[in-house]
Image (cartoon, rainbow, N blue to C red; front, side, top):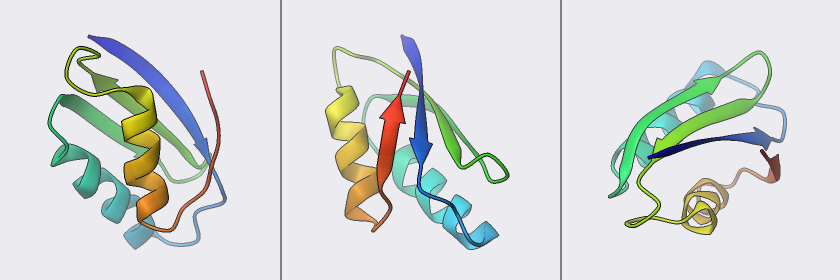
Length: 71
């Protein structure tokens, strides 16, 4: 398992946070996810043998949110 942080474009409401968390929780290989509303960051713990960082970014961007960076 690895944990990565994804910097997102500014989130404008709590429902944005919930939308991203719910989608990532349903993604196979994602163990834990926490979206920090105030800093517009997503903390994602996942099994890199099942899902890639690029897959996670695609899920987020598929919801209409831009990923500005990761670390």
